[in-house]
Image: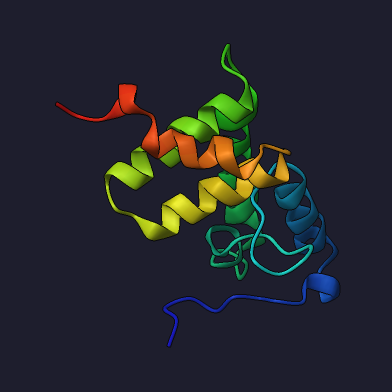
Amino acid sequence: MPRFNHIKDPSNDPKLEALYKAAVDVGFVGDEEGMPNTFITSQSERPDILEAVMGLAGAIVLQGMLPPTVKQMIGVTIAMRNNCRYCTRLHSNALEAMGVPQEVIHSCASDPDLIEI
């Protein structure tokens, strides 16, 4: 049983529907076509809080000197090193949504230059 109620159909709430679309557009994609990941849907009962979280997460991913793909690759590498399957999938899905090939995503963890000595 999940800890949080995940709203799967946001069509009754235009604000939530817009937030879901924005989340998917910036790479917070879930396993279902057109749906955001559980990081987003777990906050769906409070669209006001979700909007603030999206603003922060979007600023981290989209702004700054590093391209979003590089930031997500760093996220995949850290998640794999920490054995966090959820985070690995979250960042991998974001990279896939950005058009990064699977071989590149997998190299984030298998690159010999990244292996700890």
